[in-house]
Image (cartoon, rainbow, N blue to C red):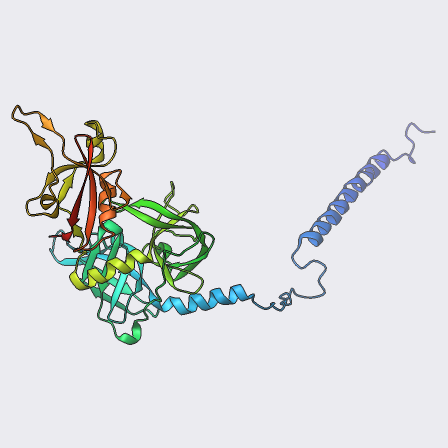
Length: 386
């Protein structure tokens, strides 16, 4: 045998090794392809469908409940009476000095009568030179005829609109409301036109503070959602009657937190005719100036309204009431402290004004007061506020 064997192939084994090494790679690739195909099958929209995806078959609606139907009817009937109120003020541009009307705020309101009187909150139109009243059909009217009563957060606007546009809201009562009654609030929260929210009368006889820091008593608390823009809108009962005007919320965030307040309709029905007839509210006058409650407490008056001054020619002067005086040596002599009018207790100066609002000029009342610790009474005939 020669030194070299011609049958020996030195590349035989090395040529076969690469082919054998490809099989595991092929198996891996096939496995990955199958896995990817499975994922596509399971997660691809419309997997397993016999054809393109189609809309679902609609399930027929059931009948509306009587309560739902009643709410829908109430909203349809009341909506034409609800308006959008825009507070407008006039400003001059910096360079041209042209007068422009600028929006200062938004709120809601409602039609009071077919003479064009619109009711809203005082704080909605506070500081306004003009107001724009917009109806559900898109028609709007601007007016400068604005009469306000900040003490109760009530304002009356007068617009020139055709009677066909004016649908007065039905007026109910608030003195006979009961906790648990259904309530319905309609307004324009955040500028969203004619929004309905529902709730109940949560409480009665609440107290809130007016924009001019006077107490508003007898307020309705409701769970119907009231948000910015709802102010001035109507609060209705289940008959669609006005029972209050949405005015305030109790919230740390500025949005509704489940507690809203409405001015009772009995108060609105008392104030609005006076604003329409006189341009102001005519209050009965006793004719006294009383001390701020904090000042009265600092000088030892724990309860009642301390009389600081009695005005000349007033009913109080005629009845012999006395304000703060000084003796010959300059020492302070406390004035009379009013503790009740008729059977209504007076614990603070604010109580005195709230009680007097329940009367009218010409009424004769019994004023009970303390002088030097002794209780006295006087008959007083109230006058018209000057």
